[in-house]
Amino acid sequence: MEKKVKKLENKILTFGNTQINSDSLGNMTKDEFMEVYKAKISTGAKEALKEARKYLKK
Amino acid sequence: MSVVCNCATGGGNTGRPGCFGVFDVTVQVLLVNYLKPDGSINGIDISTLSAGGTILDQANLDALVKDINPLTRYNPTPNLKNITDERSDDITEEFEDSSSVFIQEGARAFEGFLIKGDPVMLGNLQSWRCQTAGVFFIDKSGNLIGDGSRPGFLDPVLLQDDSFSAGLIKGSDTTKQKISIKFIVSSLVDDANLSMIEAGSITAMLKGVRGLVDVVAGTPTGVSTTEFTVQLNTLFGGVTSPIAAEGMTLADFSMAEVTPTPGTIVISSVTESTTTPGLYTFVFPAETSGDVLRVSNPLVGPLAKNLDLSSFDVTIP
Image 1 (tube, helix red, strand yellow):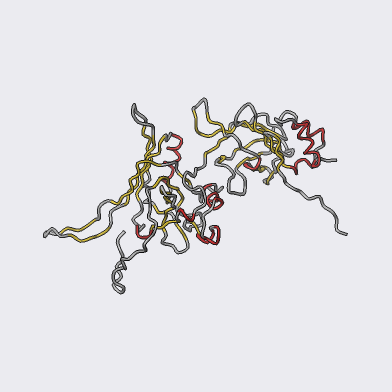
Image 2 (cartoon, rainbow over the protein chains, first blue to last red):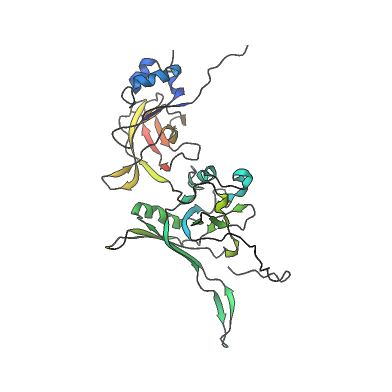
């Protein structure tokens, strides 16, 4: 049976002044995302998290 | 260049169509290395143009002027003024009866002025003197003029070695600071072979096309195993007030480990400061202490912007 492999999208997510490679979020939890980007994303890391959530580690 | 005589065919026909384009006055030149690193001429392969080799579109132009390889990149000057592009008088041999015979054409000399030229631009232009350089001319009508002697290509016009000269002319009470550009066309180039991609076959924004601006990095700060911050400036501006390289994004960079294990690193994110123009924070997957990372232009061109980053290294503490 063919094994399902999560496809790397290598998509660039833009949040204000920050661009994030979506693939880099795969090993990051919600808390880690907030820790790294809290002070960086000009439009607010909390807002960005809503869109970034689907790429984060569950 | 002297004319090759062909006794078998006689002189050439002298008719011409009712309507045809001619070269207009030059407004910009594209400086290129005449030869590619592989030794071939750094010309435009007409078959690679859009619409089956009939249209020079924006993608074609970007591939030339935003080429990531500086050795094959086309470098447009800003707008030039007061152009002179003339051949000196023919060289002839004169006889005692005052008659003369043609020996060869005089050299073609080009001169133009670049208004608001500054020392940074001057330095970059002066470096062309060392190259085996060629030029394309962009004329007032938007034609792209080069050497059409090679079938299927529009090649740069070869310059005479070491003839390129650029000089700063400071402003006065009545004049603006400017740079003069002078060069001599190689004697190997025959005016009869000059040709053009006509403006009607160019959909790219050719007239006014801009060259790349050098970007250099300051000393990275706040370096950790996963991020660092660095100020990126252009070479322009004052000593204490350099002009920042603003607006760069993730796609404008690539990162690689140089030592001890060379390999590409996928940058996780890039953030430009909202308060300090040109101040960028890079986030990347955790690296090991002692690793040396190199940040440079993206690996695949053409560049997205007119900014050419000089690569810089960061050592992980």
